[in-house]
Every structure is written in structure tokens, then in C-alpha cells.
Image 1: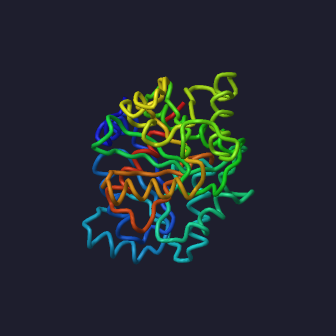
Image 2: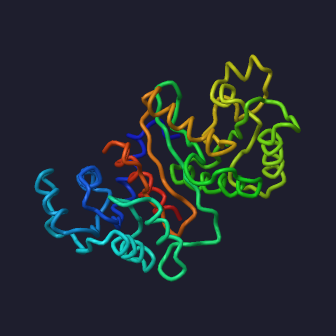
Image 3: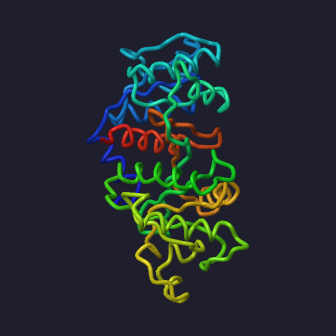
Length: 301
């Protein structure tokens, strides 16, 4: 059981270094996180972007570029395309977003010629380390899929389970969240929760334990679950929280980040390789933690 990001970093050090292809790498926060990850010995970067700006920033932050591959491409679309292509052909294990809009880099990821498409649904997984919980936990999907249907929720769970297993959580516990713990035909999230739990029991969702519906309190608090009379191995011990839609997931993500001051990280999964797609609002530590996740995910299997 991974209790915090320190334990995940320890795992990443054992399994790295991995090659990270950075699209539009001429960004101070991104290069700071790259520097930190290099100092930890978990990555070797390939920097794709404006070489002059990369060298200027590197000098300011004391990043040693000696021996690193830098591909000079100032155009954001072409830089994103080249960085993606490096992953596609196996010259890098991980794709990382730099100073470029998400829409631009995702267009390259989805490109049929050089992209990283698979038959899986692409989804976002966030990982949190918060003092009020006894281990790290995953929240999905807070950034990619707006209103997932039942089949998409199954795919989102499976992506998150792969990441959890990369943390050495052999049988992750998945709590399907809703606004209440009982099934109501008027609340689709509760119906989906029961259906997903049934699919897990029938064996169509493997490698995890799925249960629900859970309100957030009884998914993460054994005491709350006991008071409500909920008997489930998932209750109060969830590894993965499946949000009903992007609004709920995003609100939970932001509440944990800004109100609870949780340490966080995030990845895009479902592509040929993990994608570090952090926000401009994320600090260097969050970006470093996301790199840690990508190293663990790329080491899986």
C-alpha cells in the first residue's frame, strides 16, 4: 500500500529511468520539474521546443543540458507532433505537455499517422496524498470525459485500475460515487454504480473490487459507513473514487487541491503511453509527482 508520494518516488527510482519526450519544453515550471526528476534519477528527457528559450531558462534554473537531446522546433504544433512521434516509434516511454494548449497536443495524440491511439477510452486520473486519509487514492475522471455512459465508466475504471496496480495495489478497491448510498431510478449515477458493481461480480471488470453507490463520506470513512449500516470491503478504504461526471470530479479535484492542500498528480491514460498533461496552475511539485506516476505506469508489464 502506497501511503504517500514519497513511497511512490521510491518505487519510481527502482523502476526508472524512463525517457520523457517533452512537447514545447521552453517553460520554466516544466523544466524545473524535469530538473527535479533528473536529480532523483527517474527520467532522461528529450526536449522538443525553442532551443534558444530552453537554453536561456536552463541557465536561469541551473539545469545542466550536457548530454541531453534538444530538438529545436519553435512552432508549437510541429513541436507537439515531433514529441508525440518520438513516443509512437518507441524512442520515448512518456509524453509530457510543456508550454502548449492541451487541444494542440491531444490532436497529435489522436492523429492516426503518428499518434498514440489505442482501442481504449482516453481518460484522466488524479492521485492525491492528503493527511486525513491513510493512503494515496485516485480520482477519475476530472478532466477528459464530460458525461460518461456506463460503458465509458467501465473503461475509466479499467484505466485507473492499471495505474493503481502500477503502485503494487494488486486488487484496488473502486468506490463508485453518487449523492446517496441507495439506488434511485431518478439518479443515473446510482443506477450506474449498481450496474458496475454487478459487472465486477460477473467478471467483466477484472483485477479490482467495485462497489457502490457510495456518497463520498462512506467511501472514505469507515465510521461514516458503519453509521449508515453499509457493509462493504470498499467502504472507508477506497483506492479509486469514480466520479459520476466531469463536474463532480473536477469539483472534488479542486477542493482537495485548494481547500485540503492535498499533494496531487495527474495522468492521461488509455493511449499507447502515459501522458503528463499538467495545468499551468500546478506547481513544480505536482508536475514532479505526475512524472513519478508516468514512470510507474510506463514500467507496468
